Amino acid sequence: MPSGGWGGEPEMAFCLPLPGDTEWLSLRRVKWSFRLARLAGIDVRVHATFLLLLAWFGFAYYADGGAGAMVVGLTFIILLFVCVVLHEFGHALAARAYGIGTHDITLLPIGGVARLERIPEKPMQELVVALAGPAVNVVIAAGLYIVLGRFFEWSDLLAVDREQGSILAKLLAINILLVVFNLLPAFPMDGGRVLRALLATQMKHARATRIAASVGQIMAVLLGVLGLVGNPMLLFIAVFVFFGAQQEALYATAKENFEETRVLDIMQPLPPVFSRGTTVLAAVQMAMRDSRTSYPLVDSGLRILGLIAAEDLARALHDRASEPVDRLARDHTVTIPAQASLLEARAIMRRGLQQDYPVTNETNQLVGYLSRQDLPAGFLGAEQAGLAPVGSGR
Ligand SMILES: [Zn+2]
Image (cartoon, rainbow, N blue to C red; front, side):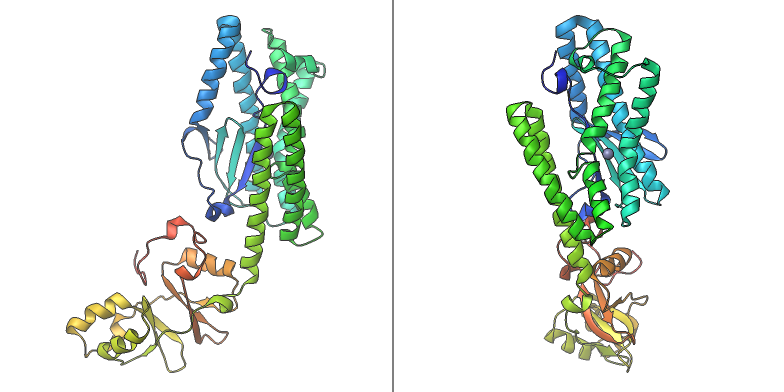
C-alpha cells in the first residue's frame, strides 16, 4: 500500500478555479500538460506528473497485491479524478451560464484546475460558480448512497479491498471529503470564494478579498500544524493554500488600485504636436527636442487627426523634407479619455494596436499621452508585446 493521505489514499482532493484575469500576474496555461479530451467545448488536459503518479501508484499496488490489486487500485484513482473533473465542470458550466468561458481544465496530482476567463464580479454569481463544483460531488455522493443503500464507513477508506462494492464506498467517502475540504474558507479553494462572495455583498470587493484571504491563511497555518503532527501531505497543501490566499489578496489590491487610478494621474505631458501643413523638416526639428515613438497631428482646436510614427518621419526626411507631414499620419487613431481608470485604459489598449494613445478631455481635446510602457510591466499581457510604434494593418 502506498503510504500518505487519508487511510493510505492520495489526497488529490481539491480544485483551484484560477481567475483568468490574473494572467498578468503570471498565471498561464499549466506547462507540461497535454490534451486528453474536449468535452462541452472545453479542453481537458492532464499534467505529465499526473501520469507519473499513476505509474507510481500502479507499481506500489502491484508490489503489494499483484495485478488484481493494481487494476482495482488504479481504477479507484481514475474514478476519483473523474469526480474531480466533473467538479471542475460544475464550475465551468455555472460560469458559462453567466457568459464566462473556460480556457481549459487541467488535472494535476494535487487536484484539478479550471481556468475561467474571469471570476464574476457580482458576488451572487461568484457564489453560484464557487458552489457549483462541490454541488457536483454532493450529487455524485447522493447517487452512490442510493446505489450502495448505505452511508460510507471510515473503514472503507482505510483499506483497498478487492471487492467491487468497496470501490464505490470509497468513492462515496472521497466525494464527501471533496465537498468538506473544498468548502474550507480558504483561498484558493471554493470555500474561500464563497466567503469572499458573502462578504462582498456587505463591503467593497477588495476588502472582502483581503479578509477572506486572511481567514484562508489562518486556516492554512492550522492545516500546517495538523500536517506537522499528522500527515505531511497536509503540510504541502497548507503551503499551497497560504500562498494562494496571499496571491488572491495581492491581486485584489492591485485591481482596486487600477480601478481607482485615473489615466489623468499617470499620463505623460503632451509631445510636440503638428498641424496640417507642417513640413517634415520642421516636424523633425520639433521632434528632436522631445523624442517619442509617435507624434499627434491635430487641428486648430487640438483635436486629434492622426498619429505620425517617428520612424516614418525619419524616413521621409531623406527625400520629402519640404513636404507636409499630413500624408504620414495614420488614421483610425484610438484615444483614451483622461477620466478613464487604468483598468478601462487596459481594456482599450488590449483591443487596439497602437504603442501610444492620445489622451483626451470631455471635449475631445488632446491633453496628454499614454504609452504602453507607462503601465506596469505585464499589465497588458504578453500577447500585446512587440507592436509597431503606431501600428497599422497588423
Ligand atoms: Zn472547486
